[in-house]
Length: 263
Ligand SMILES: [Zn+2]
Image (tube, rainbow, N blue to C red; front, side, top):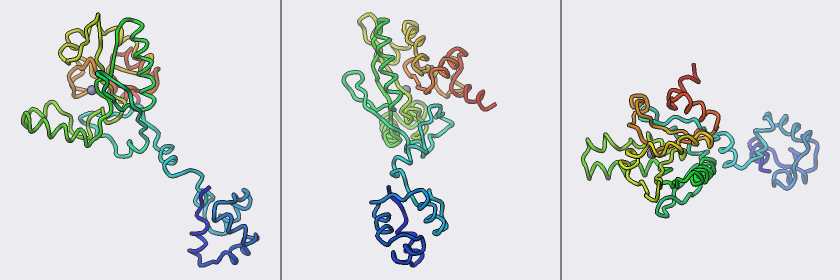
């Protein structure tokens, strides 16, 4: 267990001997506590805290800093990232990504829990005769910036402005947004256009999404709200299957669900 006893003792200009006397233990005990070799009893910890004018938590650090960060910033599965809501900086400190193999053997990074649920969804989809594979998942803000620059160079500013999300405003930054391609009747639907044309045949997939905590994110007729045209390949993990069921049953967007929740 790490602690700040030595630092705080020195700040008060005390040597180990004097400090030991003040808290009524041997100098050896103080030395062992400071080295982290000995964990004081609760009673002694209180005595030390009292003497140093601090709380126990301020002196004794039970968790490593990175574990602490993850605990204080758990993944917000309902986070809203769209053209009007930028991803908050602190989101990334709690984000745990794992690798998932997608279409053509390409490896994508996906938020840990979302990845687990996607694999279950894949299995369930295969059982009803539709193979699905990832075609896009997590994208860093830096990567988005590079894509935007590439498109601007290639197709001009107007085009890039219309079709490529601003860095920081893509839902793919969350690790919870996934694009998939599907195989129906022996043919892989890869291009966006193909998926749009045959979206009706993907209905069995949309029907089982909520069971695994996913929603279809960009719906037809909701373009004004989401800021995106319908994308029948883009799904979003929302953490709780019950919430996914509610959103899907109501035929609403994540934006509308969050509005409703705050009312
Ligand atoms: Zn997408």
